[in-house]
Length: 271
Image (cartoon, rainbow, N blue to C red; front, side):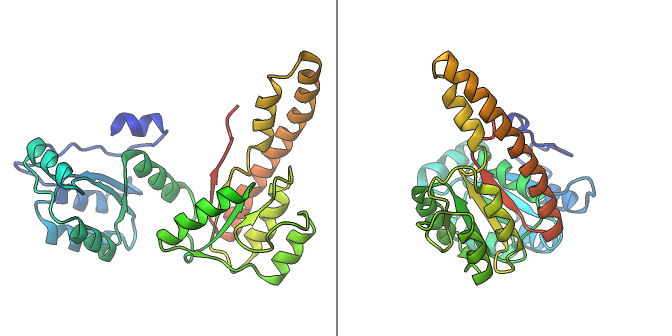
């Protein structure tokens, strides 16, 4: 877990391996970290809890001011057996853990990679004021996948205000869906002109941007396979576009700070 977090760029104020918990238990460290000013987000890997009621009381109090994100294994019969053979932990009912985490405000994730993705977002981004999500994508397939994921997680697809639709009409081709999720229908470099009205729309609490930022980086990578004369021209064109993209990102950070609205980006940001 420590290695995975380090590879993903996570910073650690404290790291504890509780082992078989013959003396101190997971709950003892949760209580300590809840009071530790250097710890902004508590993450955990749980095979089983020795003091479930105590954990519930602690977590319910701590999560009012500090997020707790956990991976709880032993969801299946095979996983529960593995946990018991590993640390003698009783994995317990998966349903009971789910309900307990929800009531205590604990965020449960599926794996260690997701653990640090969620913790990093909670640490670095403003917290959304509600569960209404705006989605901006470069294609309809992404829109469908993200819409399904949002609804399955209890998130609401936000309704765009008429003013936002009007502003998007001025940027996008007539064939765009005129609704959330916003599919730019592969219209090219239109992401940032679309983002500003969405950031300003009071109907939207958080934004997901999927495969719509980093477009110039992706195109530049593709162009590297072209014959030399075309490649040189592509370097000139897409190098300029990448500079504009960086300016757009700087403005986006300013908007996040101004409107206290988180933006989660999934796309081509490396090159």
